[in-house]
Image (cartoon, rainbow, N blue to C red; front, side, top):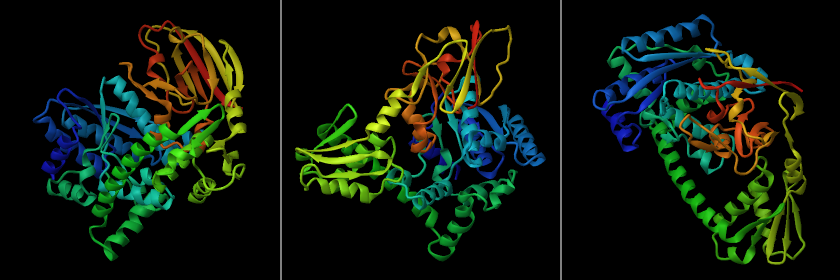
Length: 458
């Protein structure tokens, strides 16, 4: 198994000499196996590993014992260790999110902070083939499109998943053969969560009664689906640029340019137009897409109404899709910020104040109170919702990421994205409220003046 994973790491170019990697270790079988495999890598490739553990504050003493176990594991192998502790249940309640979603958000928040703290460039996590199969089934049952059925990627931005080439049974055999200890999270044996229901009930049933190789086959199918999705997206984008134009609040499809295009590309283009108009595709079904496709052959003036105020109508040689009301609301949904000052936005109260940075002052980690280097902020401080072109800095080196890509990667539902407040400096997002801040405005040793932003319920 070691050689199998090492070959996978090399094939996907996951690790390079001099990489500094955050390794997420919960103490469970998967992450402990990951750490031991990476220690094999270290024998031949000069790579630095930092062990990061997130203590969720859910299982009391058992959770604290997991943290001690991981800390000792890191110590035995001479690795730096860092622990982050959160009250996930409380944070989930504050943010109005599910426990699983909040735990994931905080987990990657911790990883990002550790990246900066330890000057690392990559994050290694322990997803395996079983996780990928569970994800595909979960997304299938939720009615996901091709992208969601494509499963988990081996490499996404700076996150690597070296164990995605092996099944959980292989991981457990690896640990048992070497008599390697690991911790057991009892919540993984409870079917309170949807993923656990699939893990404990659905997949075992399929393996026992349908096909023993089901996990491997589902994993393989996800890879083929993702490749198909990538190809279709690329082809859709090409045709979209040729036949679609945006004028003000309306998206116009030139019918003549689509006559010789395959139906699947026509539908993808229509779906993309609806998504761009409505800022999401929730509740948009294939029937809606088919109804707009039917307008191509109907008389001028025919109109179709879709969810979220979307309208599609046949014009002279065009299909026009628009949501004037939604667009108008988005344009008006922004206010300038005065510092110091208090304002209301998006159902919340925002309080802005200035503080002098004290020597060796420790900046607290809070979700709804943040401190920024005020001198780095320009003259266009605004509270608003997202806009085209928004981005933020992901590290101290100045690398940036589009806000749209962040929302996609964090799996934030489309219907939520337009209601999430952002604090911005032009198109540079200073803070995605409730989520993360831009590294460009982060407090450092040179900071003299602090901008404190506190969010309270509206």
